Length: 366
Image 1 (cartoon, one colour):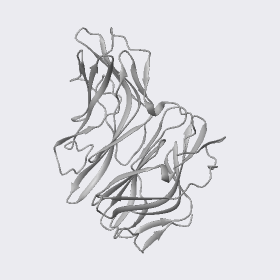
Image 2 (image 1 turned 180 degrees about the horizontal axis):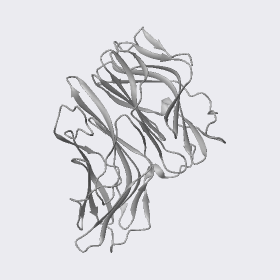
Image 3 (image 1 turned 30 degrees about the horizontal axis):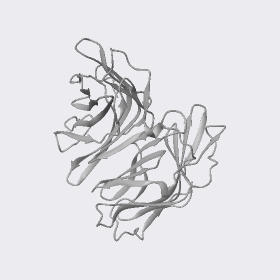
Image 4 (image 1 turned 90 degrees about the vertical axis):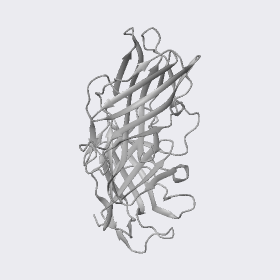
């Protein structure tokens, strides 16, 4: 995920991010031979407290330039520690067993006392979260390869890891040319039922797919609670690959729903086999709005398309009401990815008895 250099931190605070550069790292052993190699991309969405019952969300992108102090290689264990910014780090621990190796733990640590990243944070401590790894059974003298995005949520952190080339326990100081491919990148013998893709000649053309099916999504604080966030909509995504534009539909009955409800911010996370999207809503006590989007699309071919925008103020309505727009809406997340919503209704705060509020705001006439 990182490169052996000095530190630079890219943070999305009121900005649009185009995640196009990976982080490359080479770690040498005591004999000054290559023992661990990584070239990958990762970003983090972090919610943090800024006052009593108030929170904000920022998105950090692992920079190209990091330090590797604390990384180490041994015969059966290895550690990759990438440090960046003012006290932030990402640490991966490996173990080897005979002919295979695996990642045991991934720990992301972030310093809430870094005001350039976490402005107005009420906490000044450094927090750490341990992320479950799916990197297992990698053959020794091969590198782990995974273009697909792996999205993990732990407490108030969402980690998105993708475009990964990673090798521990390098033999004779030479990186292998042979890869162990992750299951998500394996070719399928059947057409995936969760998405539909089409190609149009011009990037600016209107998507030609059928109108997507309207899905009903909700989040509850626990299994015994009623919904704290509700949303219904059909979703289509347009994204650019080179000089072509692809479009893809989200299929509700093949989509997993996640997220979190907080006093002043709420997240709705939708995951299918080829789409991961997180909507982050905020409120100031009087009105709510959608203020951030984090979207990953896994195309049939080529690298994942990732788009992040934290400078949004749309779908606004009074707290305690819902926002509704039945017509098609076009939302340009970045210059490479666009969302199209249909039959939209959302209420991210103060949902009572699992029902939308009777008062709502309708979309404007364009």
